[in-house]
Image (tube, rainbow, N blue to C red; front, side, top):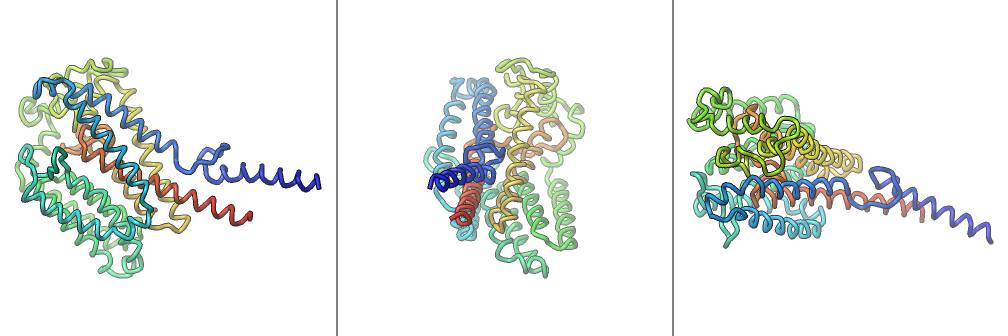
Amino acid sequence: MANNEQQLSLFKRGLNWTLPSLLSDDHKPGMQLYDRSFLVAVVGLMCFGFVMVMSASMPEATKLTGDPFYFMYRHVLYLVGCVVIAFVVLKFEVSYWEKNSGMLMLAVLVLLIAVLFIGTSVNGARRWLSIGPIRIQVAEMAKFVFIVYMAGYLVRRHGELRENRKGFYKPIGVYGLFAVLILLQPDLGTVVVLFVCTVSLLFLAGARITDFMVLVLLGVATFVLLVLFEPYRMRRVTSFMDPWEDPFGSGYQLTQSLMAYGRGDWFGQGLGNSIQKLAYLPEAHTDFIFAVIGEELGFTGIIAVLCTLFFIAIRAIRLGNLCLKMQRPFESYVAYGVGIWICFQTVVNVGASIGMLPTKGLTLPFISYGGSSLWIMTAAVMLLVRIDYERRVSLVQAVQGRTS
């Protein structure tokens, strides 16, 4: 009897160590039902973003409102909204998003049409819908919802996608409709992000290489035409190629950004000690916040931020691989799409601020000031946390089923 009890005790102890080895990323004791390192990285970037927004926005806030903490107060409200959104998204099972992906897409299409008629115009662009004191940038919603829609479509029409062109061009038609509505705002940056996510997901789903190459060539040609036939876009392209040719005109923003990086050197001028944010660098707390990070924290600060963003993107793509191995294609495509979205938007934002890419007006994920970007990015990563949670729970249930 004593021997039986001893064997049972050893079995339970072995099970307690086996489950964590299957579920945790570092194979240490203690069962984890979500990716803690991923969540810590996201929350850490948001907290860091709050500090940098407060530092970068004070001069402009003082100039516009007389209150140096104006943008900081609003950013706090945005972060509170992120907490609410996180709890709401985590409540819904992943199957809800898959079942309602089509309805979500239609809802966003309606909002994209509505913003053209009743939207709020800022700096000549009509991109925001005002709901009381809250302004929502519908194009940001379109990025997230379109990825969810594409994931659902690729699961439903996977065979058709591989076998004939009809299955390939259906989502391209939906993308084209999104692109036209977003270009009317106008917002070329979001259209480019959607195109990259669409092409990437179609490639990962196994689209035929000829269709894939035709789509890529068509997309590049369309982008070139959009730039050539819009004077302000053409000015952005030519100014980024040689900003010092007109440093006080079309190249002003980029030259000021490059000066900020130059002053930052290896370890920066110290938090809050940026000079370029003092009415020299436009959009210092939004599109060009990375230049302020470079000036105040130097090359080491830049590398730390980029490594953290890269870590988040890699974890998302890794989650996609794990879901694919478990025969969860919808979850896999969503994870791939969000990872590619975060990675590409980071590349565009940073590339624009260092003069490697034309300015596109895309925010730095989790860091730049802006409620819509923060809220939608929060919804996206919380959906990934929910996906990972359900994946790990299914592993626990599988192990328990084998041991019962």
